[in-house]
Image 1: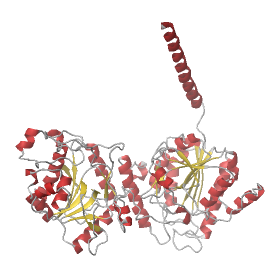
Image 2 (image 1 turned 90 degrees about the vertical axis):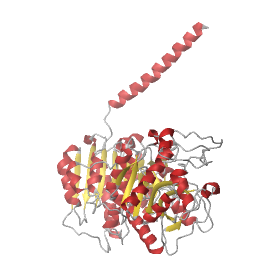
Image 3 (image 1 turned 135 degrees about the vertical axis):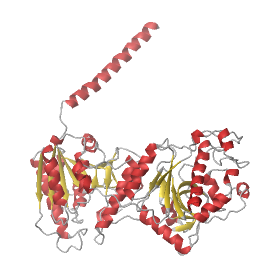
Image 4 (image 1 turned 90 degrees about the horizontal axis):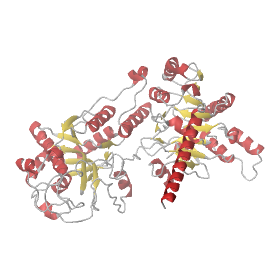
Length: 626
């Protein structure tokens, strides 16, 4: 028996050595070869406001620069795009294998029949298509392994983007890019008329419900093409060339293309005609994309989208990745404001400096003047300390989902908010925004917040306005009369961010909540008399707080229960010593429940959208629609 065990042990060791050795041999073999060559094909027009970030992130790619060539064109520009490109070439051009560029600063700034720089006329399509065909020809002439068609609206924040994409060895692949909404650089469905078609799979890929590389009918804006694939010779952006290829290949079972002379649609159809699959990859957070503008839009709207993207970078990455040193003077952030309020506080635990830094980065990007308010740390509390502070708990209270007593973290959280209410009264601050440090701001936060505040001031007397919350109870939340961004708040959790008036602070303090303490996000609904637990509400005799909520919401949690990076300093802390009953727990930090009533579908979709911003989606060109 022992001999058999020894024999099988030796076999296992040998197998391990063989497998490990093969992996090492394969790695060594790969190291003996240089990475494939990549031609970056880049067309630029009126992109001076984003070029410092675009060029910086492109240069910061973890890919050998001597294996990268550029084919670069800029024309019809009325801003400083050409000057910035020349500045970049002066500093960085020699780092790369080669740069083929042509800048037309003397030609016309617009196209024939163009109503604005964001108008896609026939002449503009023809010009762009001709340039892309030229780039394809150049890639073949220099024997590039890959050509990367890239728009200047793309910010590749992942330094591994190019390595990851080339390693996939797919004929055509696009890195999935994030935007201020659900817009991205791929489609999951296309109609027979070549228009965008909504699918469930689109959201699954965009929200990374599934991860990998997926076949799709359309990719655009950032597209990597493997020039060594046999079918690449039949790829084209030109409609007539596509028809010629279809005829020469005698594809009798496939009708000739009769769709629009649109560069990216033709490209997708040429791939389809040649049996070449298109893929989108979401294995990494590759980067971000700005949505295309409409003819009637302005540069200011593009700048606002860029501001939103920079805010998303802070939420996702902790900070906006830095640009090259010589571009740094060109990066501007908005002037800071208090949103027409008297003050803004941000509650933060001293042992969470990374959260404070992240929030301060966010305030810098979106332009908020905020005072840091040190939180009361539940980890520094104990039963004796709580008793010394004169705190008493509401008899019979237990968490409705955990069926437990309050935690020290919840006590600290309440005291943090309570001390701000006291500060408001001491300083006679009439309106204050109170923020926690684990939030993300909806796009266009500043403008939307001011609009909500102005509506509230003009149509109703208020005590509290939720900017972010978790709606809990299926009940009517009527619109505030003569307002289109406010509802009367129902039973809600979370104190992510709310505006409190001086009168509201006085009402909350007058209730003497420290003598019958419950968590702050239970206390607030009690005070505006929308809490379902009548035993608890009966303990607070005067419940006349006037509470409203922004609709749609303006703030959301950065993380929900179970997500990577989720930490709760209130739920994950010591409980006070109170006997409770058993029960099934449902965390307050879970995603909120969605209640849909007849006629409420539209507003609830916006109110409960979990951070998606759909209300400001721009249609763009027909192939750029959501």
